[in-house]
Length: 331
Length: 256
Image (cartoon, rainbow over all chains, first blue to last red; front, side):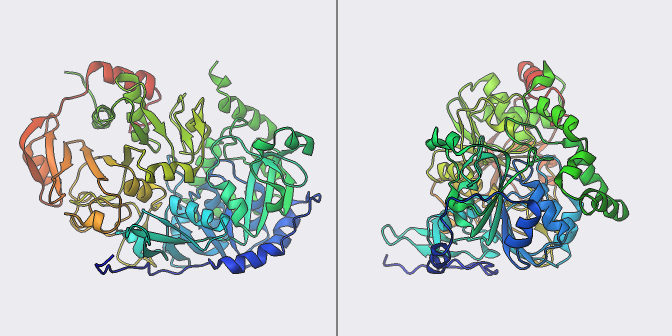
């Protein structure tokens, strides 16, 4: 490159440390033991998340989400969290109810896709109480991938020239081989991640079916990882099909069996999302009093995920959502 | 002539732009309907992809989320977000569709915020999601939208997703992949492309029932005009039948 190129950088804050050596030092001391990691939701949220941590949620907003953990974060009143808003929809909406986070990496927030925007989430973001840094879905995926690879950044070809770049914390770089301008996305090593899976053994060896979003990289990139699982299976079932292992045990710190645990979200091949309940969330958010009552009843007033599920129709509701998922309601 | 609403017209026109054997990343709603209609009319081998990882599903119905079970129902592959985005970055994805609150004459799109203070936005929308990525990395970006002078603006508050940025070569100088960019803007009034040199929005055809004046009056910047402006071919009976009976029988999209 003979021609000087002006390299720009995003002006907003980088909430997490992308340093690969410091990450290695953490992972050096992370347990590799194949020990039984089965625990409870309450204990996990109490011991694996501190106020101020940076957290990420697996799945895709209202698809394959670890609802029990998200609710418990609100119930235990965790505060000042950083959050990876990586197509976060219903998960985001729940965390907003507890005002749990005050800094936010934005890719997709506030909306619930085709269902519309969440008034409460919108109000929280527009209040100015939350520090915002812009990214995109691919960018957050690649930031997690950079961390999963043990690097401090990955180059990419998106976001340059836009305000999304301007309000990010990315930087432009030049390819040393071709002279091509790239954007460097800093590695994202979350302190904590919760991922809901179809099945795993007591050590955290997990199977996931359907679109995997960014969850393999998320499990590798995060310092502490909890899996909630539809069911616990024997390790023999993992060993019979080693190419099917989606997340290996060494990534995982805690395992909790939570059947129907993605409710009210969709769980591929198991049950569809509860659209009626999600519509109710969006509706009550329009009225401050109704919203308060609703959150009190649904989250603070329930002891755990099972009480919440029961409150909204329990197994009978799940059977209906199963029929929708399997398309047997049309036959 | 068949009776149809603006949404039906936009979906039918969009569907015609997706040729057999092409790849397209779509979101929920109208883009998904256009891709499904295209498959059922002239492009049976159109490969529909969703950003959360679904590739070439046989869609039993319209998805609610781009990551829900429908997006990989009987699919060729249930992959991942990085895999889909890397496929775009590698140059394997021909088309995508975007929406937004504002669009400017270079096809830059705002789906993030209204106001001038990013730290305390006047109105905040859902943000980029995958929109910036798809606009950056797919070959051709299309948009379906109702046209009005507020939405089509020369004072875009925020560029979420890149069009041709400041026009000319600026998109490629910024580092975005060569040869990629906005392709068609399909509105209730007209079909627009982009002028080759300046990269400004250019009217190609006008929809039935609208005039040249309507099209310009409902746009907040000065439009360029193709040498020969044609009349948009309205939806055909078979397109409308398939759209109404097979693609969106519940009228989730076309009933809007």
